[in-house]
Length: 66
Image (tube, rainbow, N blue to C red; front, side):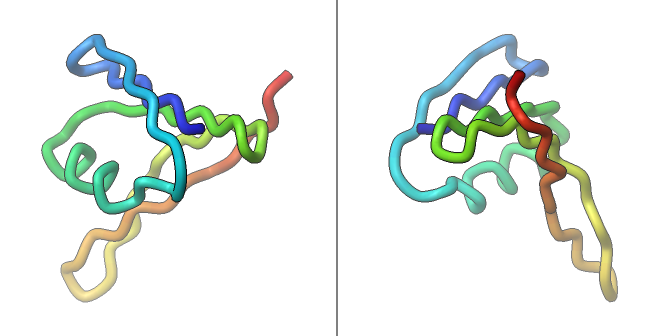
């Protein structure tokens, strides 16, 4: 399960199944600030962007849950 904390809208969402990369990219492209907690890998995922030929791609830095 993925717990998505949206700091911009002050909301938390739960998503089960595959990593919701496309959904997260839509939110991030709108300028929303997110933190993702994965109970599958027991990690906190912090998004950061990279740009290649004018195309923004979102990647995630993982931190272990304490």
